[in-house]
Image (tube, rainbow, N blue to C red; front, top):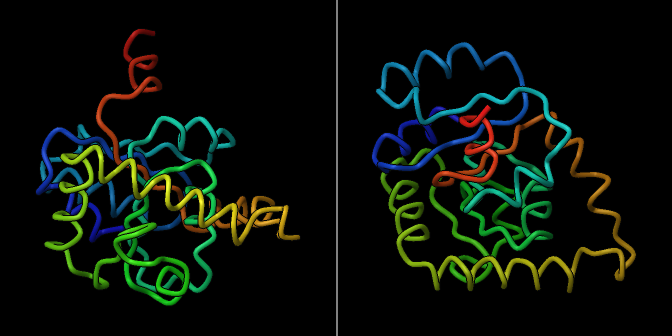
Length: 178
């Protein structure tokens, strides 16, 4: 997630939500402060409302250097959420680059930030990739095909965290009004 923080520093006016917890949280909080983006990064901890988070996000980013399965991608696709992912084993085997998601080379901050900017600045592209991902999910991974991907992905959320980039969201507005 350090690569995602570096990329976020190059994308103004965007908020990052990190859902999940783990031993890297303290280091990531320090890094976000050092990069001057601490106010735009929300460390949400363990969450059970993944549906609400994903439905509020603009895109999902999976920056993992090692992602063997890519279940979090399936979770995002099932909701029509556009995905940007590192070109590691799982995402590479799932994503048709440029069609139902965007792949960037592992650890390439510049291409990650460029991909995020492009999706957020071209709503039609964002919509098309989200819709294509949803079709890919329902055509290949849904229960109609005998898959139970949703029950498996909840494990992925706890182990890897859900990353969503977004502008001001409904959940963010609720936090500031309370």
